[in-house]
Amino acid sequence: MTLKYRFQLLDELPMIYAMCIPTWSLVCEAKEALLNGDNHKKVPLFEQIFIGVIIGLAVTTASILYVIYKNVDIHQILFGVQIVVVAATAGSLTYRYVHDPLAKRNLKASMALGAILFLSGYISWLLDIHYCSFWVHVRRSILALPLGVLLEPHGWWHILTGMGIYFYIVSLEHLRVITLNVSCNYQFIWRWKVFPELIWKGRKPSTRYSLELFGPYVEDQ
Image 1 (cartoon, helix red, strand yellow):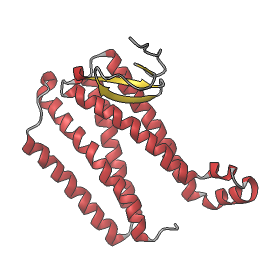
Image 2: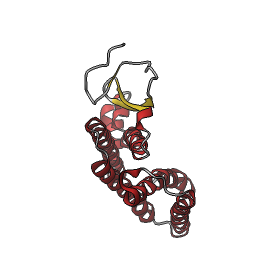
Image 3: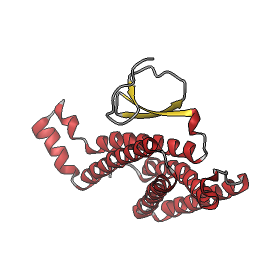
Image 4: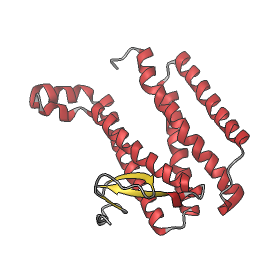
């Protein structure tokens, strides 16, 4: 560990805080779906705020404990719980309440790619913290610059998890507009057949795109 503890907190705690947003959104969606089925009624604003307050209090409590006890397990456990809640809830909502075949395929593809990229980044991070001296030796004594930069596992952690989170956030956006029954106003596209994006229907993308992962390009009309 090369960071001072207070700076380590600035690196790790924002991960938990950022995950609060999709956690809150999906908990609200799950409650809407359980209470209303396919009626697509929103949870009342007061209940949305209450759910947000509960999540906020849990995260604040964990942050205080993390600062006091300086135990990295607190961060890892809470972050892991958030990931499991988001992934499990999103998967369940997709399976039970998304009926359009194309939408379901796009959601599954985007979620799967996001999960694979994120887990790849997590594995890179584990390799970095457990075998740091080995990577340093290979970079400095064998590969040197510029090839040495390819064996920066911590760098790959940021790149891969960033990409994975992007894929997953796009899928959560798509799931949200479906559960709110406003998907008719949006279109799910794959730029260059691989990068998902949710856009306003009727808006012409500035790049080539397909409607499915690795699907045929949509020709200009």
